[in-house]
Image 1 (cartoon, rainbow, N blue to C red):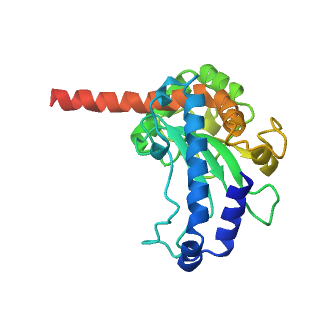
Image 2: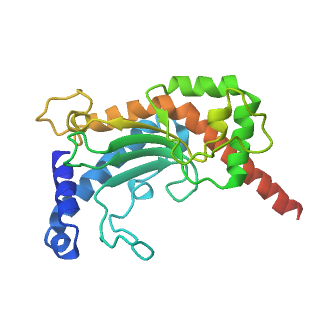
Length: 246
């Protein structure tokens, strides 16, 4: 894992094609190790979330090349790695488990994080999620209490409760959300020693200890993720029924 973090740090400081081409062999090594880690995570998570069974690493990994077509930032490569493990794979449109690896010299802990949920949902999905929260807030709150080490990303919230819901209830701060995603930060030391499960000289990717640590940290968010994906499935099933009637 140290080699992965070192490569990303160097890439951040030398984000150009010439440097990347010179260090392509190093990237291939990093890529292979992340593929191994991803497959281990899939296998671990599928033991307690059957929706993940059958996925392959390629279904959950993103290219390191940035899409610069419509961006003012023309740096060609990402200086982070992301693993998104979700029902049907990263393109299926479901919420999932996301592991973000991003070293940063300005903070020794980097910007590493775990997340469970989804971003940028269409309004048709948001409506059903909010209705489910409002209909049985106590059940929803129990899901969150299981994932108490996580917090909501509320950076993209509405300014007030949307129309159709009574304002001034305990649901308010959840109904204004536009992204239903739980997040928690990881210390860099946790990535280097698997949350203290190993000695510092162990290869915690090869022996599976890092994957065990990460999957164990994801587990408390499983019921919340199921809640989100159930709403997505409901909308899609309704749309399919409407098509069949038409």
